[in-house]
Image 1 (tube, rainbow, N blue to C red):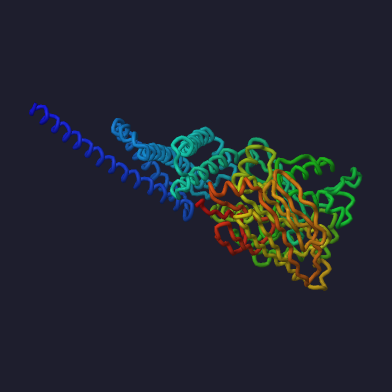
Image 2: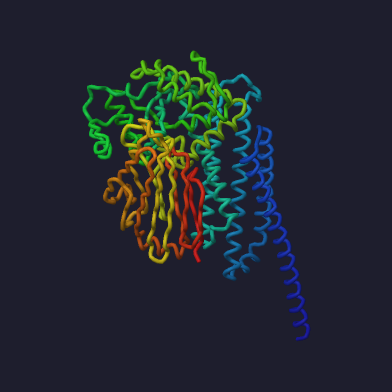
Length: 592
């Protein structure tokens, strides 16, 4: 009897020792995994923020490849402790943590492996682009060819990244994990970033005209005469891309695209009511707040005027030109003895828009703008070879600040544009929404001197919201184009009830548009005038009820073409935002 007790104690002691050793080894593995994950995060930070050349990309690739190998070893070592982990998993909180940790470990292993290959491929592309590889004289089409040959590798990497995304989703749906953890959110951001980059690499050859040339319509929008997607369409350009290189650039005044013999098209009611417009034209076709819809309308106008359809429509404004010139430096415009920089771009554009020589070409090709566009394309291509980050950074800034929007016929390309917020789409969100949109509907270009500020306050007890928009027309009374004839639209969640509106010259009834509620009306404000417009409304009760469980979020999109008006927001729990709306904004506060 005494011997059996002694043996039982020895067995228990041995079990405790073994369990302790296992726990110690598991703790060591956790620390090693954490250190490895932190090294992955460091690579992401360096590549995203300060990479200067292909060598740094390769260094990042080597680090990630090493991290992937270490994580694979850790996964195999953890498999040896399957029985121990199974016993520990019986305890509910601990079991959830173990499952979550195992899933996160697998996700990091997938990501580091895919990212290592992606960075190595990017380094090779960088070499070809900058002329530092084995074939320094290869043209831009070599990049397209490289991406085509790497397609199967890219698809394999995409599959791995998508698997990582599914595993992260499973943490919430199966394990019940909390995806609000900052590290988990950073991981999700990494997955989305890598997925977007790989998708772009996969689609780039087709978009750049390989193997079939692609034809695009460029819309030069004048944001002084603001419209929903950025501004009045004063000029257009048709450009064909073949193997990554621009061909057949044709730059026209938008009026020239119109066939005077075509049937008339009834204009949107605000144009008819406040401008007296009788026939809708391509130059005013960007009326819908969703750029995808406006682009489809523009395609219909092309067909109506006997113009062949295009593969995509890209719209930009004057600010986009300034951002690009800041990145590539000043350029000389051939044949015009003009040097254009980010500092004088607006002045130069205005001068040639109203000069005598260009006036004679009012209904013909615009010679200065055609030469400027060609020079910009060449300078951007040259800069891309010497400093890719400068050009890529400029494009990112244009998209983020809504000075460049794009719509494509190819559904995969359109999905990619939407994923990087370049699609100019109307928001689709279950949260609170505030989208203020202005449009000049009569002749004039006053918006450069319009000061605008927006205040939004929400009472959480009643779901009652107050939106106040202040307008100050800083144009000179002597300016014939200084009158503000603004058709204001505000988009809020579907089912919102309008209580009252004040300050508008002509208010319109609220209506449901594209799954949202639209408040609208006309504002007539002469130069030197000031006006306060206010909407009071009740948000849907179900929306307010959800906030107590999931927390509150307010989405505030930035209208394309705007510089960023002053925005003040007070949320249900008292969080205050006071700043300028330079990009799309999401304000969040957690549930109590």
